[in-house]
Length: 457
Image (cartoon, rainbow, N blue to C red):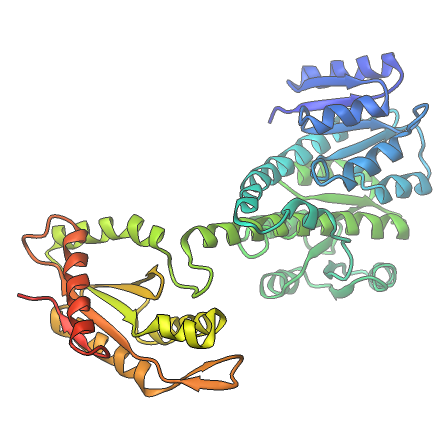
């Protein structure tokens, strides 16, 4: 997978060396010689990943990384810190700043390319989510990027797969202060736990006894129930080749033994934050999709949904020679409810009205708020007599129980008038059927309300 890589280093030979290596792997390369220039390039969205040197004059790499990760517009950018510093405290400082990885010079080319490709793949998924989530702003849902960036990555549920008791105890002790940790020595049971539980992350030892830990990582990445869960490998120094393979098929991160406690916590926090970042964006996408087709007040489908689905449903009924019916409902004297008790009370009635309708319709029915206090119900495979019976049940249900208003401190009587129609052979479109339902509703209103009227023959 190709991508645009930004190299940030104040030493030109270092830039050229990395540029040559990455270009030979078919990556596009940009360069910045200082922190402010790097921030400007990232702010313009010109790169997919940042290879960031730590030791730079003025603004060092830690500060550049911190600013990138604290900005909602650049927080999704993967940052790999590249430095000659090799102490655990240096790695921890970089991870605390938000870095996705920390590579020590001289850089191992295989590890570099594996990590770059892995992070670029993750960013591609995040980019798609970001584009869709930003559309939620149009629905007045606030800024999903700011909400996602504010995530701390703490208070998560972790699954540790380790069959050495001493190693498992050390991992649990290091993580237990900030996370709920479940340890499982048996990889088969661990897989069941992962699919049945709601874990935010799994740490898997690669050197399990009598089992290939990398195989478990592969299974966790392939199953639908666990595909979104971050997986972190714990490997021995001689296992670099297997770590690279794991990164190639989508494992998110790794730690080498002996595991530094602080680095462990920092890497887990980073992965949990990234997972929740994506979950927040995904939630915003789902909410915006629902708002696009749902009525925000009643929870029923909106007019747009009805218009976009009714044509296909009607055409299918014509081709198969199947019946389809329509009910048009209108709350009686709804204006009087608003005028007497206020619009908030009217909203309460509409919500309760929608709830009662839902109890008498099927999953295959289209129930949509048509406008104001009007609701249209489309009944696939319903004959005229069945549609009339459903309408009568809804009318009776609405009339039978008073509606609670003013936060359940008062109850008022509400009734509904309903017009019923069904598809006829001469109908050229669903609009013909809806017009007859509308005329039947008009007759129900003028015949005294609180009644069901069928379309004229």
